[in-house]
Image 1 (tube, helix red, strand yellow):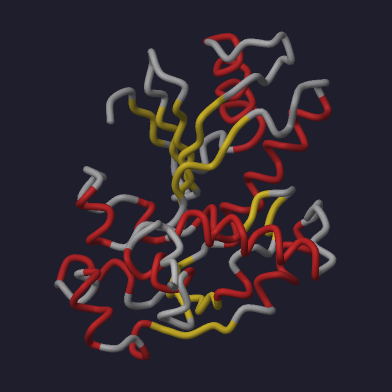
Image 2: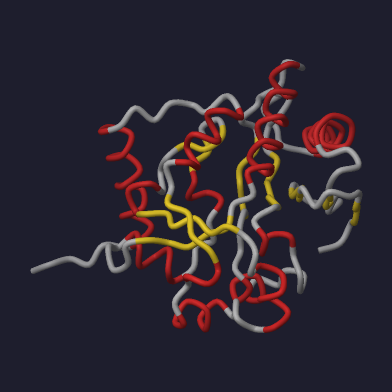
Length: 228
């Protein structure tokens, strides 16, 4: 009797298989980030099919105006586990919607996602600064990268969230200072580095006090806020 595999189990199996079959090294420079992205097929808004546009609400006027000029990456199942910055993988910056699940289970060949390379560069800079200061550069996890409009609405994101344009990341801060605990001290380290070294006045930082969550983006101008 055939057993239907859970998509999350299949996702982990594909990750292990990919690393076993490929040289999936840590990505440690902007040049290497660019190389990974260059290996992914690129397309545009006009090439998206009507089913995708309807499902994601991308064709609604406000959203279309926001994203129609941006580059889409068609990420195949075999590319989801490519490392894009440090040991973080492309799939960690893609929303886990029905298209993602279908791709994992082999029902769809590709996932459409918007990536702004600058957000990978800034993530790399954050890791470099952490390492330079003697902290754990992998002391955080990626929660969200690109979110298409429908997915963004479903999880309660801002109407014109920077995630829709692929220029934002949400992270959860863990044990940055290697003291065995994840607490405010660790988050303060991240926020200080983002404020003074990485994002500065060229992007947004969501502070979210009382939580381990942090948002940063590359909008090109300063923005700061506390609430979700």
